[in-house]
Amino acid sequence: MSTGGNIINALELLKKDHTKVLKKLIEHHAGEEEEMFPLARKTMSESEFEELGEKMQARKKELIAG
Image (cartoon, rainbow, N blue to C red; front, top):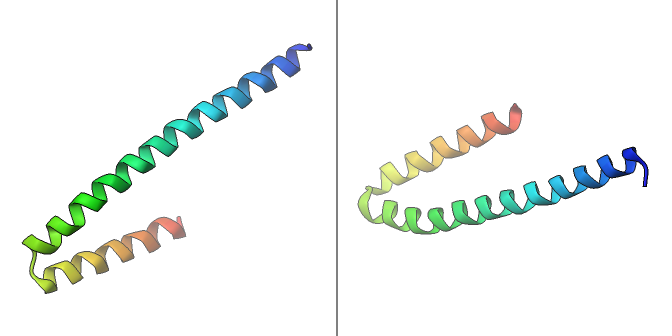
């Protein structure tokens, strides 16, 4: 196999590894949120919880906009 082919194979393996790590990070983050939001709902007033949601949505829009 050519050197170029070896480099492509190495890059494909690296991409797969990064994808696996990203998947694990996302799953961990989602698990934290599943624990965090019920606790927030219990400990915050309704208005505080709604304000948190509004801030999170605004931040999401900022991140998507770049």
